[in-house]
Image (cartoon, rainbow, N blue to C red; front, side):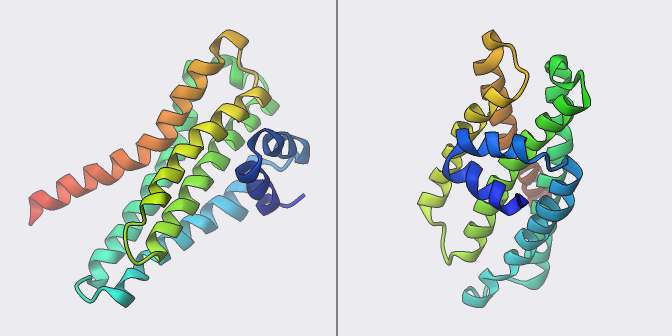
Length: 184
């Protein structure tokens, strides 16, 4: 099964999608190289689309926005992987368990990247796209059943992982905006 079919399955039917992802045995490296990184590049490139309908935007501003967005999701993946494997060592005891954890993080981040792409392409801040971000915790919760999380820690893990996946890229963007605003 292809990676993009896995992405479609996990977005449209999360419980079934996570089962399909685990059955497909696609390595984390393949998901990174053939889906996550290319989608990050597309997301960065879509930062230039608003220049078509908003003449006040400059190339340098949109270039910086693309770099910040790319970097925030890129770095977030590695930090989230490190934090979750530290808090939940039972998730990284075997290669298969670590691969499942990293795929769990990647597919949830891919959903967030797709929403960023959609946001960049639309001519205004389309509020329903922001509300779609609230769907990611549902996807994350449904994915915990295929990880090796102890039954009494499932809800805590789902909340922590969803919070990290939702908030870490936003925090990186805010740090940039605060530093960029002080320089002007």
